[in-house]
Amino acid sequence: MNANERFLTFEPNVHTALWGEEKWEISVHPSSPSVIAGGPLAGSTLPAAAGDFNLLVKVIDARTRLSVQVHPNETTKLTTGGDAKTEMWCALTAGPIYAGLKEGTSAADVEKAVADGSFENLLVKHDARPGDCFFIPGGLVHAIGDGIALYEVQQSSDTTFRLYDWGRTGADGKPRQLHVKQALQAIDYSLGAPVASESVKSPFFDFRKIRPGRGTVLPGASWTVVYAWKGAITLDGKEFAEGTSVFVRPGGDFTMSGEGIAFVTRP
Image 1: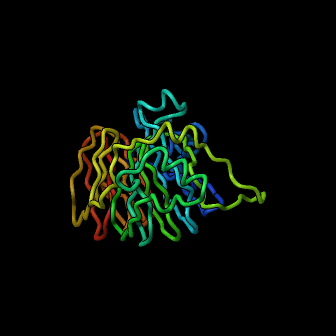
Image 2: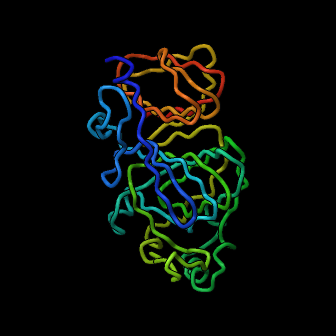
């Protein structure tokens, strides 16, 4: 397998929303799979070349805050319906995020806050700095704040239960639909607020930041997702510009070099 077949990049896949936009960088989700750009596989969709890869990778640009949400996990999806969704965020810019309920919050507190518009009082707010990582397991209540950009890795799921929407209206001037019943079934009250970290390890993915320098050898027996965060990177002699997401197909070990910082996600 040559470099053009192994190191895959993709056509832009941009989703706009009331609050801003998200770029689906690497997707095997059937609603919007990534289309391979360049090389002998150009024009093919990623699922055909992805093997057992089952994640969705996004770059989120939140010009205004997102709704307060919760996703089901492997257990609660059996009650709520939809697909389980555990995710993580790495801040690309500084800004606020909301992740976790304040200690002692009950289901009754949540229902009351949804009804009277005081939900922000229940949320734990974090002032994220560039490079801060937050683990958001299924069942954790969360919202992305105003004016922050995030790199997100998640299970390949588009199931979101909107619990609270800050009292705003949609493009049609009407309040957007909430999913309070399903959200209440999905919340895991045993989960504490996350703490900012340098890396994330979960049952579904292992995320870390790397300064590759003149050459860092990475294992290649399984798939790897690489994002050139600060500066260009080179993979086995093939260069990728800053801001590029690369899907590395399984093969032998490969070498990454570059003077900046890259994100690496593996099984």
